[in-house]
Amino acid sequence: MKKFIIEIYEDTAVAILEKNEKSRMMITKLYLRPKITFMGDNIPDKTIINEMHHRAHIECFIANSVVTEIIIEPVF
Image (tube, rainbow, N blue to C red):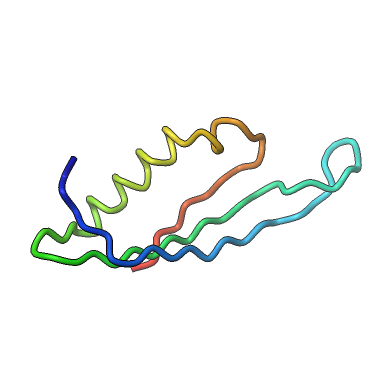
């Protein structure tokens, strides 16, 4: 919609594995650390990038389907 051009998308995910209340192992937290390289003349600033990550997370099918806490930490 904003006509940003993504050149590279990288993500370094880190999962925290712990026992749940039933003493079963589960991933309790998932940290996503996306790093996006844009190209062209239309480069978003950090505020817009954070807004895009937030909106993508709210609309994410996977994030809305699992009980694991998902934390987005963009890398700049």
